[in-house]
Image (cartoon, rainbow, N blue to C red; front, side, top):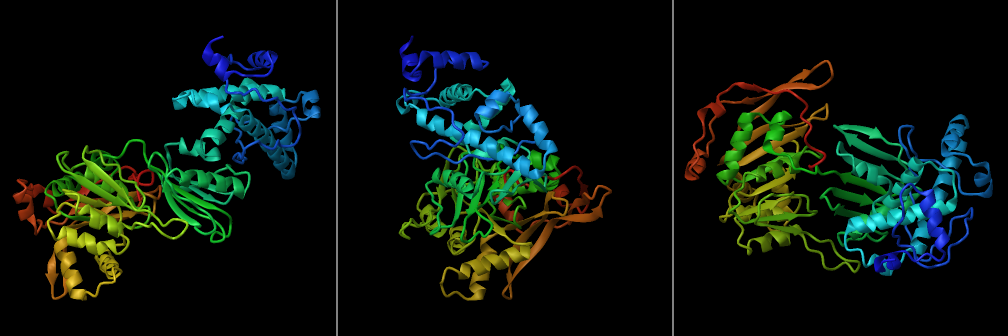
Length: 538
């Protein structure tokens, strides 16, 4: 037996290993079971030697291979009932019987998971450098532990049970299947018994459930601890992110009356390109060309829209027009932007610690960014006093900046920036604030989520200056809606309004000549389903 085999396979009895090999479909060459004595199979959940995560209570749908089994008892072993038979019987029993079967299945998973925690050899784990090796070793150990239960399970049922326990051990429990579905834009958990998803702009309730609120709270804590944050009664609201960049918000009791609430905004594995937005009808080719030239000409662009409108998606897409030769500094409350350039510095604000100290706001990061020799400053979303420092940066030579703001129209976006500047606590007149806004921003891009769930750029407006204390604007492009079709999908077209940019000289200074055809007043019909947000947007 090799040295690695001796390290990873330290079972007390050699016959235990041979039984596991016979019971499982694949051989078990190595495991991470320690030499601790094996406990007898009991009805109740074993108490782990070290704290372990509570387990999920995912109720399998008929199409799923996930088993629903009773707890391992002498009666169950003697009767040799298959899980298929249990499921069939449960479908004929009252709903309370189905609930009992589901709870029994959770006891089985809890017992296996607790025994896994008791049996893990930490010294063996340290020898496994790669995540794939760790997962494979734990999976083999789970097959061994399930074989000890001596339940009449098929190979598919064993694999399904192993997968669910593996989700609890290395992943986020019942959320793992949802996170693996690329068609899901949002995952919304409203307490342990209510899990919803957003697919293509439509909400759907799932059959996934957590064991209880403590189980859900454990999953939330696992998510936020990865980014150095915490959630408890003293700090019941938290923002975090998943390793793939998906945005997470959680709020727990006493503020959430229905139990812990979790919202996950998914990110696409591959960011959208401008061609993707054109293909989905989110923008017309003419609008896309104009926005790309505006980014290259270093115009300051404000992206405006409501919640889940696609602001971050559009910001990520437009950032693709920035040259690789420029130094970019991004500033965010929760890191979501995924710029593809080589020279990118990412900054993220930090909340206060448990003593109420150590907080670093976006405003401080904007101030610090000015000392970092940036060619471009990209603020993920302006939502506070950092608006003033951002305006000053734009007005002092840092051109080509991009940011987003929540608002319902281009005019409202400027009014909201004005309000956010006042939050800085500096006594400035309304006229001076508007003059700074008028000289700082060049374009306002309005994006909207329509009634059918599609997301489209609804207007591109240019700021032409300030006249008599009022910020002047002219609209260059707009989306004209023409009702709904038979399938209740929005019909309409992107239209150029026949006006050339007032600041065309900035394009010329960058060596860019705008084609007159871009601004000819004609519709640019679009088709298809403009569903590009959600999975990678704000």
